[in-house]
Length: 299
Image (tube, rainbow, N blue to C red):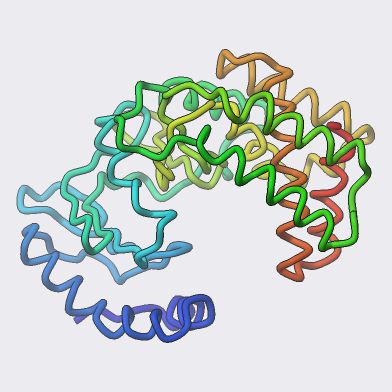
């Protein structure tokens, strides 16, 4: 039986409560069944991700792979669909899937993420190029982000009122305008949904491959804010934060072949939404302040 990292156990129980305990209790047997069914042998101890466990394995043909089993959550429901749609184009290959158990057998990368490679300009450009490659026609059953625009608008207004209007009217209005004008008119293309530096791994089949997609259909520019998160330490050290924000978003937009203004507007919306979420979650003042600074400067 596998040994689940204690840090992962604590995180799941803290986040999911009794449902998490029940899932964790069944996890070792589930992993054993998947290994047997997919004819794999573990090669190293299990590691943890944000919402699931990762187990490096050797397949029946001696090729390396990773077994990923996630806690059942709506945010993970379409991950396998995204990998299947891409078929290895810019993302790791999907070898096997068990949707009922939120489990997949995936191509193994090199365990080095884009976080640790090169300078921020090259990283940002690579993310943009990858976003463009991943923007293929989405299957009809995947969630359409355009359908969530009314929900996003309601959340912005509700959070602003309940949190005591923490942002300027200009910043809130800019985010609302983006949702109304761009949110309801998004294309039916695959969107990764969380394409930051840590979700791109070095590989052998291609230099870099995406992992951990959400599997949505929409505007690829919705991932623009994620490139800012990846290089946040150097970003906030810049002498002119607004100029640096616009410069990095321009690099992403040009590489992704989208309008610069579109990338800026989606990043500003994400910053407003993130600022509201961070306040509600009780995040450190530094984190909340970073979101709010970006929201204001891009409005």
